[in-house]
Amino acid sequence: MATAEGDAVTTGAVRVVLVSLPDAGAARVLARTLVDERLVACGSVVPGVTSVYRWEGELQEDPEVMLFLKTTDAALPDLLRRIPELHGYDVPEILALPVSEGHPPYLAWVTESTER
Image 1 (tube, helix red, strand yellow):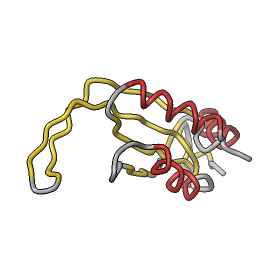
Image 2 (cartoon, rainbow, N blue to C red):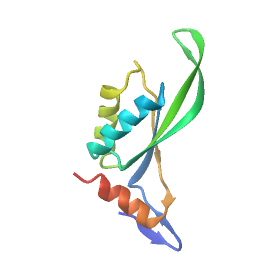
Image 3 (tube, rainbow, N blue to C red):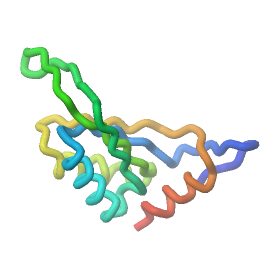
């Protein structure tokens, strides 16, 4: 649970998970599924990302979108299992970042939205 410290909230319970996808349609489908399954509270699709990387020994540069998912530590293990099942890439980018501070009502909403 989040604890108030002045105007901010410190929590170890909320995470932002970054997932790159080939297009906005795929990102919206993934976000809707994960919200529906209560694995995330929200998914934000950010278009216009260009990823430069090495794959199978070759330098690649591809247009992608970034999906920002908001979830909790409690939902994270199931989320990390579920994304690869739904994602089209062989090795999807999935990075879970801790949220150290945030707006208390928002952090509470994330927690409530992912309770099953």
